[in-house]
Amino acid sequence: MDKKIYTVSRLNQEVQKLLESGFGTLWLQGELSNFSRPSSGHYYFSLKDSQAQIRCAMFKGRNRFLDFRPESGDAVVVRGKLGLYAARGDYQLIVEHMEPAGAGKLQAAFEATKRELDKRGWFDQENKQPLPALPQTIGVVTSPTGAALRDVLHVLARRYRQADIIIYPTLTQGASAAPAIVRALQTANRRAETDVLLLVRGGGSLEDLWAFNEVAVAEAIRNSRIPVVAGIGHEVDISISDLVADLRAPTPSAAAELATPDTSSLQHRLSSTTRRLHRAALGRLGSSQQRLSQQVARLQLRHPQRRLNEQLQRADELEMRLARAWQSRLQRHQSRLQGLRASLDAHSPAMQLTRHQARWQALDSRLNVAMSSRQTFARSRFELLARALHGVSPLAVLDRGYALVMAKGKLVTQASSLAPGDEISARFSKGEISAIVKSGNTSEQ
Image 1 (spheres, rainbow, N blue to C red):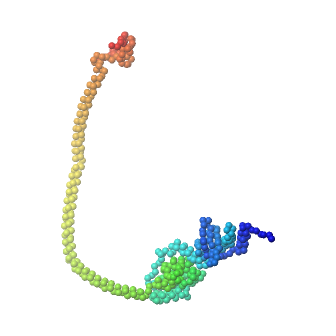
Image 2 (image 1 turned 90 degrees about the vertical axis):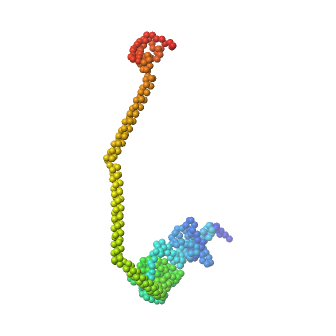
Image 3 (image 1 turned 30 degrees about the vertical axis):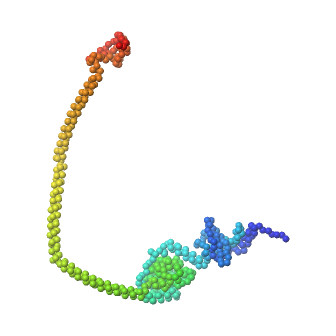
């Protein structure tokens, strides 16, 4: 009997072919588990239900098209093909597409819209309009057949009957609900016949309330010139319309309560205000009477004759003060004038010329004295130097009988420097002669 023996690699290849051809592309729903994002950008995770799980891989070329960020614990629906990871011999699902499952998808869309509008500043408190304290006309945007309208009307009848109520009927569920709500809000703003708008709807699932998460409805609320109070669903339900509205109420009934004051409270406030007004009127009357008495007393004190006498006395005082001030000012000006005259005299050209002449004469006298002294000193010094010069002068030596002998323009100091026949000249103290050397004696004495 022949044995058909496989290698492990071949077996895995055959199994992989069977998996890929036997199932093809399939859709699978479950919960994400062990979700990881390595640096390669691929997604690796397990998809499980209450009894089993399967390993999955979603490569970077596919997961970059996702419009949400998957995490472990998310319920999702995936599309892919079965394959085999030969290295471990594990079969796995190669995911090509992923989307949130059921309500999870709507919740992801809600979160995405919420993030986008929050970036635009549509939820900022500074953009909210204040509600009127005593609205005269209240508009209700809701379904005319819903329980929310009955709840609102019941609350208004109990709390605030004096207000007029205008209903703007609209769909609140389904594909046509969002455009209908937008038209109702726009109609209310165009007519401008209400002081506040209540946008209300009873509770329901996320799918039932989805119209209030549409961006078009949020934009209509934001553009409303009339303040909008949103009361959509139950207290746990929060919609985009709740966040954009000027005020959010947990329920439709609460929206009616928040938009209106309580009649009994108003009556209490009215009674209290009446009593306060009465007390204020009595206090004001007493104050006015006291003030009148004070004014009469002041009027008597301010009698025209009294005031005239005071004014006359003040005029006399001012006249005396003026005379003293004028006299004081005149004295100051006279004193200043005298000072200026003295200063002018001191700086007049004649005085300056006199001072300059005296200074010039003094300088001239000092110059003459200095020149005479300088000349005397120079003459004495010259005579002294002349005598000293004469003492060392060759001419003085000549006067004692000596002569200067010159040969060929040079002074002769030794007889040996002359030869017979040389022409010489001899200079005496008085006069000069020329001679010719006949003989000489060169021996030293």
